[in-house]
Image (cartoon, rainbow, N blue to C red; front, side):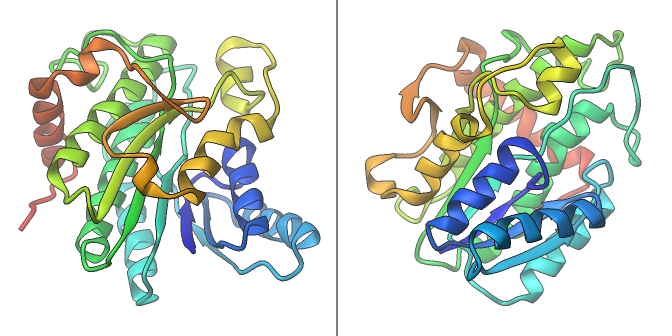
Length: 267
């Protein structure tokens, strides 16, 4: 199994990479810092000496770097079995990405959206693939398409919750767009986990990284026939996202606006 994991140098992503390596996956880890990528690779190899690991650096606050990362993956000319969109942030103050988008929205939604669609033509050539989006139960209950870029003011929690709703909207829309017999697309809530995001946003601790990685590892390593597609998972079980996530108009409009923001045209 060949598995791409974004945001794999800390927290849930790092633990997911370790546990999938322990299960024999060839892991392609992503991070924005070369030193931390090297440390993560060595951390995994110390525990899984025969692990196959390749590391890639990209700053998800730049769509250009996301594109370069996608090109690097595609240049390997290999079939990928799993893509885990795990990378995420919470910004305490209003800040903008290299492309002029509010950073929480840019990193948590636009970057995985763009990466996934850049890889999708390649993934469609394969017989089977899973796309797993790490979201959160902290989802906004409504979406204002005139305020995706903090046009009506910035609040740390509103921005984060918007980005997590977008993760689920994207999941459900993509599941409708692909052949579900070939590509499954699911989202998940990892739990309240002791990560940098939790500490930065809520000033509290949580459950272990192992607990946080459990549903990602489950979806990546078990039979997709038992998982279905277009679902939201909590604790390895199908669960309900917020009502707004199931609104197809929301899904379609976010898709179109995200394509425009990424200046991406689908053939």
